[in-house]
Length: 451
Ligand code: UD1
Ligand code: CA
Image (cartoon, rainbow, N blue to C red):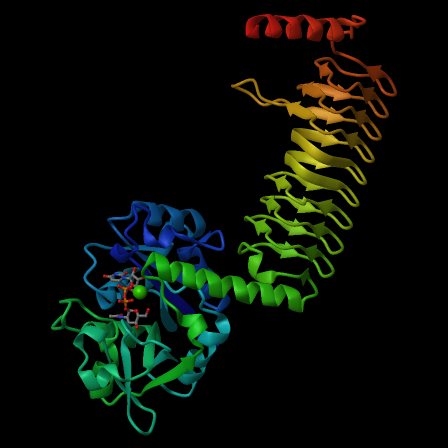
């Protein structure tokens, strides 16, 4: 099979985002746009990936280097257009022999299925293969100018298009495949005599056609080719991504009664038979096993919820929360970096941070793991079957033994032995008749003032 490489263009300034954050590091489903583009290239079978970044956004280069290594980064400085950007990757691909697909870093919905027709066209002898789509609103996109026999004659950018050409609905997705040598040969011929004064990648089509080479287009669904140029488009693409992912999860057997109110991340994993109630947010890093139930208005991040567990309504799971089988985490309970054992319960208003809760333990309302002294974090370990009375403050580092009780309102600063009761609260004193006497005195004072 022909070897495949991808050149991902990510050196534009992204000025239309109007944000100090580089466009490529804006997040879609909790993952940077550039990572979505890299995922798509890898899934499309590209063994080599080169990302072209701008000198104006060192954070993008650092991000890509951290994921793929230095050899995967090429710098375009200054950015003089998409064609000029591909040329910046020439050196990095000097030793590569095979097909190159150019994709855009701001096109995060691309799938391997959408790219596949380009490989097919290449296999059928097309020298340049372009992925197009039929735009509901083509404004802003490059238009594909096709001959009646389907040959792609050229691509014309919106700004350079005539009124007639602007009526064309077939648009350029920005994804273009060609043999490496041919690609760089054609790019060498591209000029910048256009409305923007830039070197357009899209001009290689006209150049190839003029040479008598074969230039063809395939049409992908618009949902896979949408570009992100503004905050509004980012939100739109997020909406498409979320809808696709929810549909896929329901297809796999996840139950959601109001799917449009459930927000997922790129790596959210939910097993068949899990139930997700309305208004749940899955930030990155969450696994929910089948048979678990995530009730309304819960927020989960970096957490595992095991089979049969119930989380929420109104629960917050933060990174490192591991909720065991059949465990219950109820309303206004926050869990961070705590492994909660099988069948354990924390049903109301608690903070469990750093530690463990043994199987079958019961954490009363208002219990707090006091894990932080302003400098360091300490652990709390609650044994299996232990009963933590309401409003207990467990001052870490501290351990409560298996089967032990703590009295409500206790401030526990020392370890508690298994099966013991620990009480650490003021003794109750009672003054008989005090309240009645107090009321009588106060009422008399009030009457005297009025009179
Ligand atoms: C581009 C295409 C257009 C297509 C549209 C699809 C060209 C000339 N136009 O237009 O035909 O319909 O995408 O979304 O190719 N970039 C660089 N260096 C540069 C300029 C851009 O790396 O000098 C990168 C950007 O970071 C971005 C991508 O190339 O990821 C596309 O650039 P952008 O300016 O967004 O092009 P569009 O106007 O969307
Ligand atoms: Ca764009």
